[in-house]
Image (cartoon, rainbow, N blue to C red; front, side, top):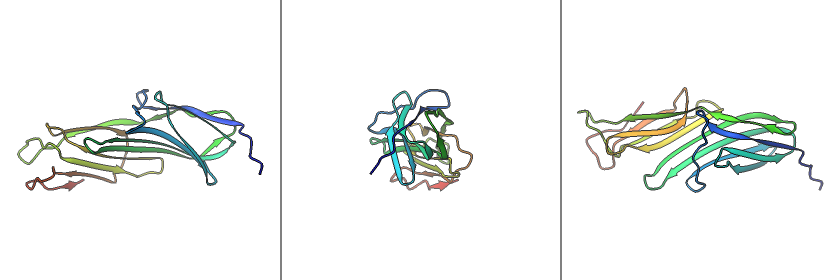
Length: 174
């Protein structure tokens, strides 16, 4: 068996649209890339500064960057991914990515206008092959929620669920 020599590298940064790096801790919050072609793949975590670097053979690849965050204490999660199909690497290549992030926030209130704490909000978008995002968050004591995510034009669903045990409110979806 003769292995091909590695004669190319792919490196760059993955940053939020404001130019800052994603907060990662390697335990509950991660940003990683995966690169694959012809049933061969490699993946690695992105550095705290948003940087990555991988050695590979020249070729055409599928590039994927995936961010995931899980907060065990609140059972909240945020996930998104960015994909590039047919990404060509012919030699040493730099691929800096600025992901279009937004903060989605709001307040959940009951019919009388009072804030609803511990309501669960789920939303998801898998509208296009390039971007996917989803989140599951809970409201605070003031009924407020806030989550950083990818800017998406279409949502697959957006649902609000009342706090567990609450029989006065009903779940709804937009």
